[in-house]
Amino acid sequence: MKMVMPSWFDLMGLSPDAPEDENGIKKAAENIKAVIDHEVKNGIPANRIILGGFSQGGALSLYTALTCSHQLAGIVALSCWLPLHRTFPQAASSGVNKDIAILQCHGEMDPMIPVRFGALTAEKLKGVVNPSRIQFRTYPRMMHNSCPQEMMAVKDFIEKLLPRI
Image: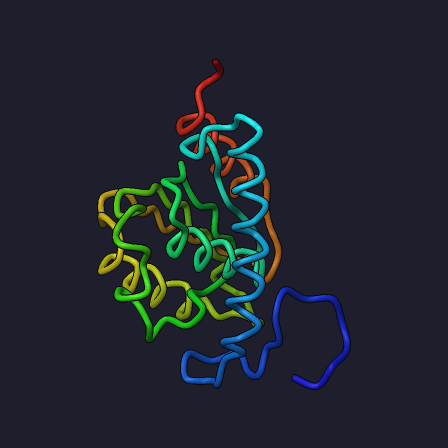
């Protein structure tokens, strides 16, 4: 939005119908996919990789995992949305992550990314992945930040998906 700051891609607006930086989103996703490829080549099984992030990082995690050619363990998507949502479900990488586990959390008082956008994302995701694998949790009085209950949900999600080996 014409402000200079570190980011994964340019934000042209924060509403479901705002124009999106398609090239920037895809480039950022390719950068994350290169990291995943590197980890897999170094012996980390793809099914033990969880992508996650907050706000724009959570948005990028959703987009990257859903368009990734590796079968990943899960996605942690905090206070975010699905970028390029109009391209789904077609953009999903041949359904390789159709059964991916998703933990999506959002503050009910978020003024930056309203909880309604999170709810719309959760509904959209039900047409992209197995709906039974999606958890959408909201937290009363939480704004565009985190809370101990949310972090405990993230911890439990990770421990369930990635048991110690």
